[in-house]
Image (tube, rainbow, N blue to C red; front, side, top):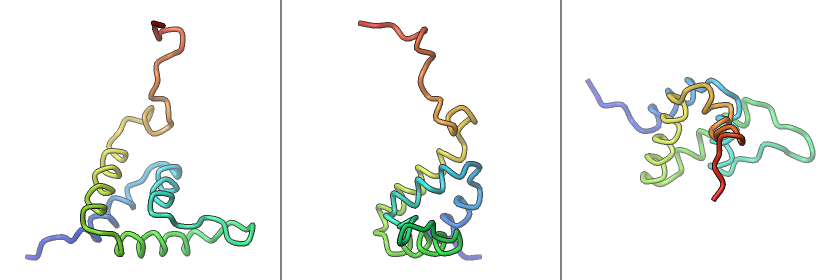
Length: 94
């Protein structure tokens, strides 16, 4: 039995994304263009470019991105929707 590669782990993690914002964040980190000539690109093209950019990345960058993606996929729903801060009424001022 062979070990799973970083590229295969990335494909598994990216398929577990629950919120589209996470995918768009991964695309931005990998510097994939989402808009072409003032038109939104097709998802299949963006996905292919994300996979190609990940494959071309150095090993250290791949591991960092996999950790970020894994943590984001395992975060509670409140974290996914960007609600990481406390209620402003609960925050103490210095």
